Length: 331
Image (cartoon, rainbow, N blue to C red; front, side):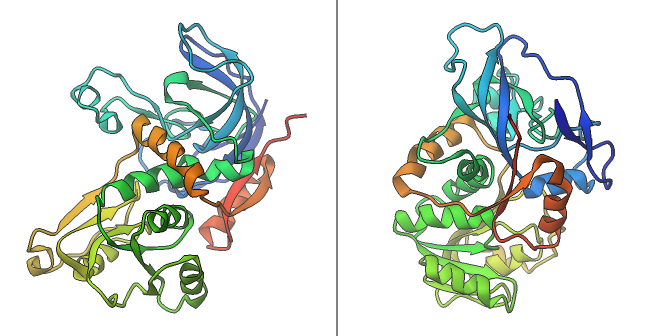
């Protein structure tokens, strides 16, 4: 099968003909239709995340169809079913984190497109327990970004509780998806972009945001919660200054630049800073239940498998107008 392979961080992916995988017990062999490109793929390719499997097939927003089922009893999937394969690919199910419904923190966890080969290929194998049925209303391209930008964004959003005034720092793919859910649920939305990015601010207002401005500005009202989608550490103290008493700042990325020091007074009055690590299967079940009701819309740009480096380069340069999605030639 064809695959785009990372041999070493900070090098271009290589198009190769590699052996088609075979499913082991409990696994699905999936013929891949699409795989969306995530910022985490950039962090892996650029050497910002430690100890990836090498050589590695990246990609963890995978949409495909079950071609073969490994030995397993009572599988929830059948041959031909469409499935989604996310970032969290395996946990041990036995550690203290797994036994307390925090499988996203499992010390032995394995991750698709990082410590397990992923979706920049024509086929992959995946643990059936960590795959999802996908809503029928989306085609293979439209649904791919929901498998990370959507899922991790949703977990970040749920950590804000019932916050009425919600801020979002960075308005890329994940923020655009989650903003639609927040507005559907009646939140007041305040969007922060790069200073001077009037186009993105206008897009946020057109979507329904109450206010949009630069990340160097304060909103017209104090926020009950803020989600930081941009991987920029200095946004953390900026968001703290925008919070009301008891507010929470949720850092939604797997990687972030260093957070600068800030006065304790900015944290006082029971303000909270928290990160989001990975996702749980429960997050996915809840997310794919609400998404069709909200009718969340995704924005995408498609690329052929062999154009994966082009997609990554354009993502790195900020030149994409939607989520890059690799489309496989399955003929």
